[in-house]
Image 1 (cartoon, rainbow, N blue to C red):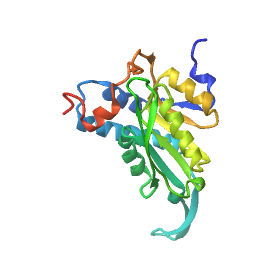
Image 2: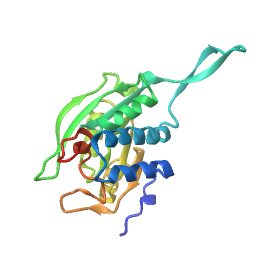
Image 3: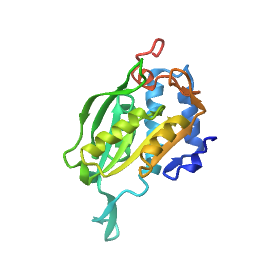
Image 4: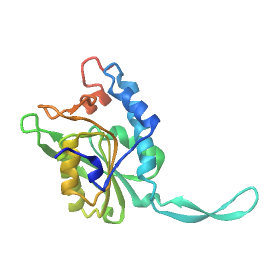
Length: 220
């Protein structure tokens, strides 16, 4: 059956000219490390603005030049951003710029070059994560394996309210993720055509971690 993202009710495919423009720049193989890193941060801010639309607020008293008033502020201590290492770190800066003071956890996964399956090597999360709104972030949703494993790790540590944000996704990854986690909101910046035989997203942007951290030939 032909893939249709609209069949997945938990998926939001973001559609904004500025977001599309920046993702196009991100795809360009001539984009150097410093610019690539900045673009990932800016894209995370744009996506985070949408994904955090319903975050909890509470009222505080402030004094304007005219009078005292009760106004809403974000409950920062109840927010936790969790990048999947290492590429997710590039998005974390943007999310934290949106909500300075929010908590940040980390999950370390890498893809085995032979099996293409994710391998866990690190997990550090807040002890009270069960009381937080958790935003899992990773630029690429390819096979979906890393995202699914990361969600399982979050749930194992008690997380109850999870949202996943990525920049580029393949249909195969969306399908796999949503079949395992139909209750978890998924925000996507761009939906690409397919995975190739090496499980890379096409047209994609290459290895996002390598391009963020300059560990690919000619990146500088």
